[in-house]
Amino acid sequence: METREQNSKTTADNRGKRRVARRKQRSFRCHACKRELPFCWNCPCGFQICDECMKENAWGLTNGPTWVCPDCGRVRMF
Ligand SMILES: [Zn+2]
Ligand SMILES: [Zn+2]
Image (cartoon, rainbow, N blue to C red; front, side, top):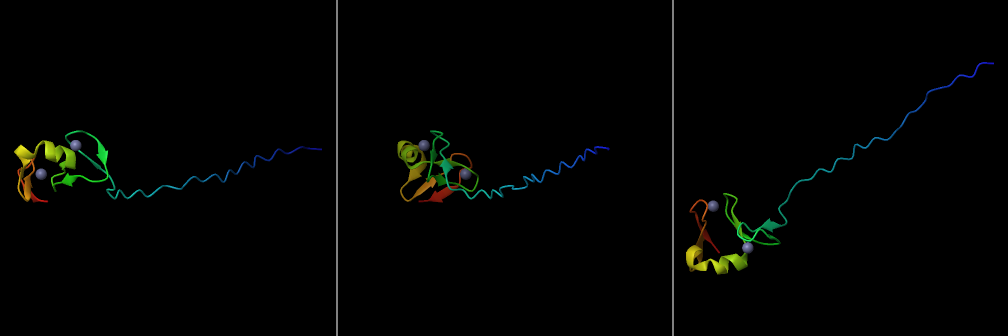
């Protein structure tokens, strides 16, 4: 009698579940205090600053209803 060892290791362990992580920006990261926050004032150039830091730097950033991005100089509305 012959014992045939069938090498039938068919591991159907297809871990093809890749998370399609579309990064919708749910959280922001303040460029001033480096904290992650649910909201930051942000600029199209990528600059982000939280409300706290905005207030702290109000003297240099804001001018009434607008603030100026320190990175690109764009004037942004609140
Ligand atoms: Zn901040
Ligand atoms: Zn900017």
